[in-house]
Length: 209
Image (cartoon, rainbow, N blue to C red):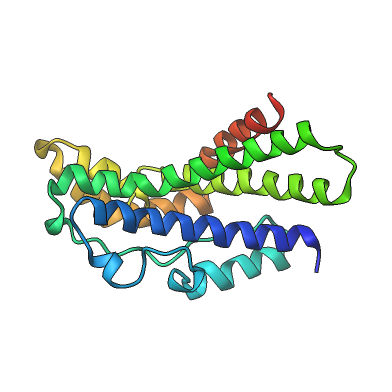
C-alpha cells in the first residue's frame, strides 16, 4: 500500500480519537461523566469507531483516489448534568475542533523542528515531515468542517447554545433541518467553505504563505 495512504489513515484515526476524547474530557470537567463512564475518554480508536464514518467512507475515498476524511461515533453528553447547561454544552462542542487545531499546531511545530535539526533529504526525516504535513491538513479539515454552524456538527452545538432565548425558534429550525442543509452544502460542492480556510491556514503554518 502507498505509504501516503497509510499516513493518512493513521493521522485520521489519531485526529478522530483525540477529537472525541476532548469532548468526553470537557464534559467530565464540566460535570457530566456520561461519556467517561462509557469508556469514551480515551485515545483508543476502537472506542470511537463509527462503522460507516471511520471505516467505509474513508475506504471509499481511498479507492476513489481522494484524500482520506471521515468522522467518529459521537460522544454522548447529558446537558442536564452540566453545571451551566447552555454555556457548558457550547464549551463541550468547541473542545472537539479545538483539539484538532492544537494537533495541527503541534504537527506544524514538529515539521519546522525537524527541518531545522536535520537534513531534509534523510529518508526517515522526510517521512516524518510528510507525516506532519498530513497531521496539519487533516486536523484543520476536521476542525473547520466541524465548525460549520449546523447541527449535528460541533459548530451547530456551539451556535444553538449561544443563541439568546428569544431566538430559540432559530435553533429549533436548525435542529430540524440542519442535517438536510449540510447534505445540500456537500452535494452542492460547497465544500470550499471549510476546505479553503483549512488549506490556507495549513500552508501558512507549514510554508509561511
